[in-house]
Length: 263
Image (cartoon, rainbow, N blue to C red):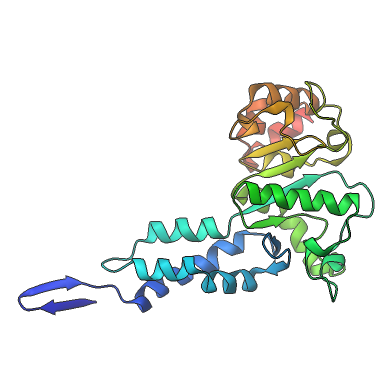
C-alpha cells in the first residue's frame, strides 16, 4: 500500500498485509513438528491447530503484526514463528509403567503436572522442567505424546520420527537412568540407555544433544552448547556404538550406507 502525503509517497504495510505474510509460516513450520507436544506452562497435550491458536492469541503475535509498518520482514517472521514453535525432544529408557497419552489426557487431569508423584512421572516432570530452563515452551516425549491406541497416528509418528528429531529447535535431551552423579568417563557407554534404549534416529538426527545423569546434571559436568561438540563425549559414544564420530556429529540420510558398514 502507498500513501500520498502532499508531493510525497510513503510505503505503508497494513495489519492485514502483515497477517497474510505471517499465515504461511505458521501453517508450514508446525508441519515439521510432532503431531502432539506438551505445553510446558499448562502441562496439557496440544496438537498443531491448538498450537497455532495459542500463537495467534499470544502478545508476541500481536507485536509481530504491529511492528511491520513500512515493509514486511519475511526473515523476522520466520525467526519469530520458528522460535515460538520450537520444541525439545526426550530420549530415555522405558522403565515400566511410563505415563501414557491416556494418562495425561484423562478427564480431571489434562496435564502432566497433575500426574501422581511416582518416579516415572517425576522423570517426565524433570524433563519438562529442563525444557523450561532451556527457554522453550514445548516438549515431546514418546511415552505420552503418541496416542498408541490409534494405529494411523502411531504409524505416522514412527515414520516421521527422524524428521521430528532433526527439526527439534533446542535439543534432544538424553536421560541416563542409573548413571550416578557425579558421572565419570565410561558411564555413558555402560548406561541403561546405551545398552537398551537408543535408536539411530534419536542419536544421529538431532543437531544438538545433551546427556544427563540420574540427577539431571549434565554428563561429565560438560556445560558446552552441544554435547555433539564435546570431543570426550563423542569419543566415548563413537567407541560404544562403532559409528564414526564425524557421522554422529553431522549425520544426514546420505550417510546410511556408511552407518550400516559400522553397525
